[in-house]
Length: 325
Image 1 (spheres, helix red, strand yellow):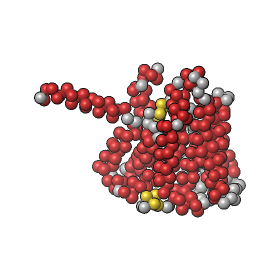
Image 2 (tube, rainbow, N blue to C red):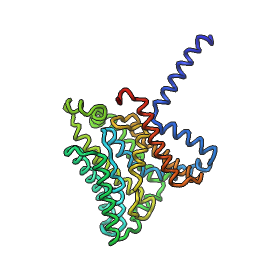
Image 3 (cartoon, rainbow, N blue to C red):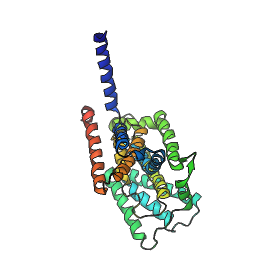
Image 4 (spheres, rainbow, N blue to C red):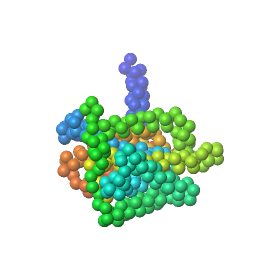
C-alpha cells in the first residue's frame, strides 16, 4: 500500500511546489519576513504595530494600483513623485485657499490630468514611457522646489490629519479606504470588457491592434488612472505625515514599481492581479520597519530593495523565458 501511494504523494508534493513557485514573490516573501520577525523582533507582530504598518503601507498601495495598471499594458509611470509633491504643495502652502470639498477633488483631477498628458505623449507621439514620465516627475518636483521659496509649505489640512488618525472599530480608516478601492477595482477588472482588453493588450499589443481592440485607448486610460491614484496616494501620505514637504513621496514611484513586480505584475502580465501588489506593498513597508528595528540604515534598505526587485524580475524571466523570448 505504501508503494502504491508513494507515487501519488510525490505527485501531490510536486504539484504543491509548482503552485507555490508560481505564486508572486510577495506571498512567499511575506511569510519568510513574518517568520523572521517572530524570531528576532516579535513585538512587530503585535496587533497595534501591524495595523500601524498597514496604515503606512496604504499610500504605497494606492500608487502600486496605478503602477500595476500601466505595467499590465506594457507601459510605465515614474511620475508619482512629482504628482505627490505638487499635491502636497497645493494643500499646505496656502496658494489654493479653497475649502477641502473642492481642494481635494481638484488634486485628484490634477493627478488625472498629469496621467492624461503622459498617456497622450506615449500613445500619440509614441514617446518612451520611461523618459516621458520621469521627465514629468522631475519638472513637477523642480517647480515645487522653486515655488516653495515664495510660499513655504506648512501643515496638512485638518481633514487629512483627522483621516490619518481616524479608526473604525479599532482599525485605521486609511487602510479601509485602500481596501474599499482595491476590491471593487479588482472585481471590475476581472469581469469588465476593459479588463479583458487590458490583458489582451498586455499579452500582445500588435495582435490586439490588428483585432480591432482599442489598445491605444486602454493605455491612455491606464495612465489617467495611474495619475489619479498617485494623487490619492499623496493625500493619504500627507494625512499620515501631517505636514507638507517638497520631497514628500520622492521614492514612492520606485517603491510602487517594486511592489508591482514583487506582486506578480510584469510588463504585459497581470498574474498577480490587484492582490499581489497590495501584499507586496505591505511586505515592503514591514520590511523597512523590520530593518530599522535591526539598526540597518538607509543605504542598506536601498541595496536590499534593489536586490529584491532584481531577484523578482530574474525569477520571472527564468520562469517565463520561452514566452518572454
